[in-house]
Every structure is written in C-alpha cells, then in structure tokens.
Length: 58
Image 1 (cartoon, helix red, strand yellow):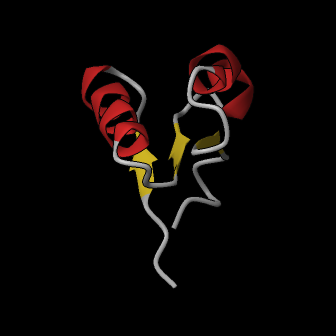
Image 2 (tube, one colour):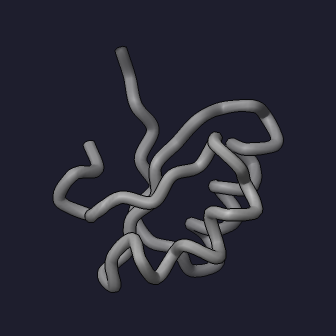
C-alpha cells in the first residue's frame, strides 16, 4: 500500500497538506525540527495528516 509523505512544512508542504486533507487523502508530514514542532499545525487536520520523524517518512 502506498503512503504519501510530505517533506518540509513551509509554504509548499503546508499547502500540500491542506490539499490532501481537503481531498480526504491521509498523509504524513516531516520537517527538520521534528514532529513536536508540528503539533499545532497537524491539529487542524484531525486524523488525516500526521507528523513523523523525517527518517520514518517513506
């Protein structure tokens, strides 16, 4: 099964996360600061967008 990973949470990564969420597509997002820095960001997406360590992202 495929898994969508977004590397980077700046403008492009944030926009992609919003688009995937709007389309009902689950994805993970990672940045160089780690998942703890993305808690507030991912909270607005509920369960569809999850923060992970960059090493874990496919």
